[in-house]
Amino acid sequence: MSKESKFIEVLRRNRLRVTKERMEVFRTLSLVDSPLSRSELLSSLRNYGMHPPTLYRTIELFVSIGIIQSLSSKSGEVIYELLPPFAPHHHHYRCMSCGLTFPLEVLDDAPVEVALRSLDLPGAVVYHQVDIFGTCFECLHEQSLVGERVR
Amino acid sequence: MSKESKFIEVLRRNRLRVTKERMEVFRTLSLVDSPLSRSELLSSLRNYGMHPPTLYRTIELFVSIGIIQSLSSKSGEVIYELLPPFAPHHHHYRCMSCGLTFPLEVLDDAPVEVALRSLDLPGAVVYHQVDIFGTCFECLHEQSLVGERVR
DNA sequence: CTTTTTGCAAAGTTTTTGCACGCAG
DNA sequence: CTGCGTGCAAAAACTTTGCAAAAAG
Image (cartoon, rainbow over all chains, first blue to last red; front, top):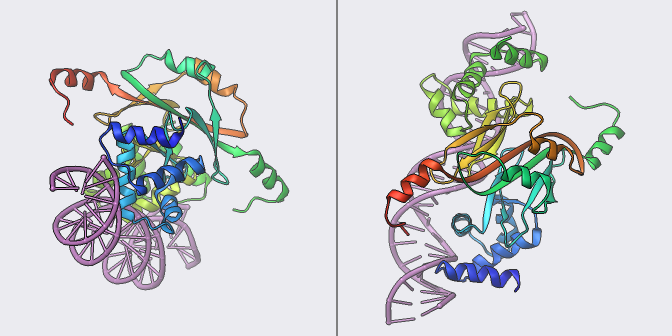
């Protein structure tokens, strides 16, 4: 079953209508396969004719039915990405220099996952996010080429 | 050495001035000991006389010199919290129902930390964030008291 | 045909900017 | 003293809201 038909299923199950705007937001997120901010989504979809209120309402809807989740970029901007089953569960490596987000594949039996499951918590668990911040090899390399760091 | 004097040290090391506004923002974050949004900080500090532009500039500054970090709340709001050495490294458990954030103490040799250190990553690591989402026991209890879930 | 969803305009809120003044060093 | 930082006002950007029109089922 394709991701799009799964998506349609989820809308149906929630008694929501399948509109081209919702499809388009979903497609953009699937295609890019990396978290996007509201403004990035807007500019991607603007040529398509998406209006801000529609996008905002769609994002809120998607969050509420669990299609996407929000995370914050290092710079303090909120970004959104697809959740399972639309994207596999993964962690993030984020470069603080160029801002790129690298998805990190995590198997269910990886040590991190096992360790997270065995924690003693103040409630039930729905999902978790792991974000690792640093400087990616490409940026490290570039920095070493430039003699001096600019203040 | 107290946290405040450490904070002053960091400002000095960055050749920044110690002002009462900066002290006040730092104090609020230390005192509350849980992540705060811009608007929460603003209302806490408003009676003190903080103006929005000053707060925003201060937050940006604090992020840039590594005093605080941003994370996103479930509702998609950006919140800020102190980083080591002003607060111990910790993970978060966040209740999706009441919105409360529970800091989770993590020792350096905890399984999660060890597992995270042994990952193969596309760059160098500066720090990481782990956020676990779910429903806290208090909210679970309340929900069981209410017969029906509201649609 | 009914009900949900979108388009649009307007209002509301938050954030940024520029510059003059005041305070830290 | 000498700028760095803040206060203030104004502008810009972003987000929300309400309602009529359009589209989905």
